Image (cartoon, rainbow, N blue to C red):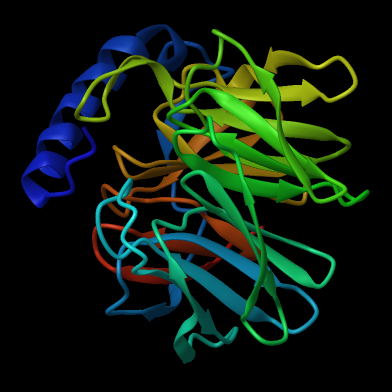
Length: 304
């Protein structure tokens, strides 16, 4: 499972395109949810090349510093080769291995003075000033901790894509918080407008990453908690990252390599950079796209 070769990716992309066409007929026929090709991202601002399977990008808004997680190997390997790169907002790579000694680091979030990094069964808590890991929290029953988001009260939420749960950190304690058969493969997570958004990868995942049913974007009331499908995000694709720019949500599909914007009652495809479009990040009107299979990160200026 999760074999990391270009041949597999090309095969997955072909299978996924067929699956999305077959599974999206009803949605495409709906005028409220039609996925139409439109470039809303304008031109590429910059790119950083020669990375090592970049999976996630997060920005420190006060300084403009850009943090990039690099898997640097098999996505479920425990090899100690994963690391975090540091760049500035102009695309200059300041330090390729700013924080290192990780296994297969993926999603990240900033809470207070620390960077929280999801890495298989562990969450690394990294000092933003030094790049040193000050603490590691372990979820022994997790299979692949994937994305991270932080609520204003400091609670940190982490998805377990392979294990099918959502964990949370409160008072330096990591625990399983939510799981549901409705969401067997949660991927991207985002705290947005007093609720938790969760991007599902899909239902019945095969060894080549494809699913029998495309993933849906869900909204969760953490006080319940209960899943509610975002109408424009219903069975959208094999979803990875989700970010918000003003009232619009941008969602990436890792397999098809498509980027969608959900706004009001419409969803539109705004970019198709290729397979491996992973956990996107945002700062202001700039969207950061980690292209995992191309070993690069691209910054796009979003046109409003």
